[in-house]
Amino acid sequence: MKIMRLPLALLCCASFLTASSHASTADPDPYEPLKLYDGGWQVKVTLPEKKPDHLMNHCARTGTFFSCEQEVNGKTTALVIFLPMGKSDSGGLEYRTLVALPDAGKPGDWGRLVIDGNTWTYSWTEKNGEKIVAARNVNHFKDKDHIHFELQRMEDGANWKTEMAGDEERAK
Image 1 (cartoon, rainbow, N blue to C red):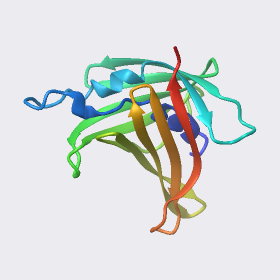
Image 2 (image 1 turned 180 degrees about the horizontal axis):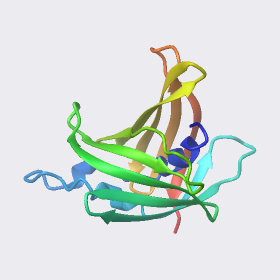
Image 3 (image 1 turned 30 degrees about the vertical axis):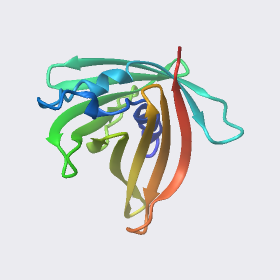
């Protein structure tokens, strides 16, 4: 399960500024913010020994679903599927997410994405031995081309611990 989270984490970082750019007189198109995943991104993890990764997303809407095939440094790593679920409890847009891997391994359970202003939060659970651990990827947007992300886990049921953080910039 942990192996498939790194591609999802990278994809989750390549996101768009906000869903609030839609006209306030109509319900927002839930697919519109996801379209900005499409294209290239430079991923810079805040580890001195790690060189930047190049992330390329090939995204499309296929009826009810929206999906992005993701390449990291030229190698296909995941297909992420998004299913709009309406408004979240906080009033943001909510989606279910599922990651399929190119080795045809069994996907994990559906995760959750909530877009709330300039913050996009992906959340899921994973097993650590016999224990279920909560995990999330929190994306904070400076603008549509610059994103700060933090991958976090909560093992004690109360405190989030940041395990990795970094920044993304849209590749020109």
